[in-house]
Length: 214
Image (cartoon, rainbow, N blue to C red):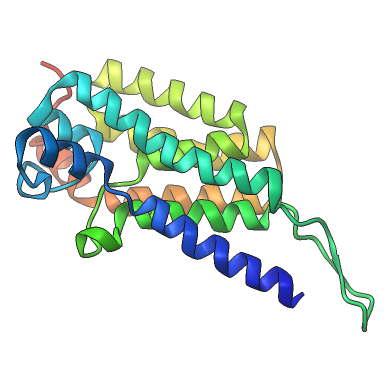
């Protein structure tokens, strides 16, 4: 058990640091010498990057942020997803499969939104969150991305697409890949992303939210 706890701590730290890599901030700084946090919503995510660099970079940053979520989680799924643990003293059994990837995913998402390299500021964790979900269950992640794309296209609001798509992930995960840890993670992820969008929700109610296109 001590070895498992040590590995989980390492996964937690490394995943957080990977999530903290501020892709949007770095690209805007390199290409325009602007701190993206001083523009628009102040987020380092793809939507805010689009305001400075244009549509092409919106998709590039979204891809990179999703990749940042996907790679560490898929690595943990393949190499550090512990099976059931049996206590040698009491004989008690503990189901651990799925726990390590979820810890990794949570750490990456928090790192993206609270980057240690940007004084604990960052993005809203949508693309990174979808990347982690793709690694946990590709069908669920793919469906989430499709739902996001369709709702964003028809409503013209990225925030609505993000909130609705991520809110549906616990239901999709329960139906398609019902690992308890995965379902709990998607519920936590949905709640966190919605909280991160509180200002967007306020602007939507007031009719002041920016559309992705006219």
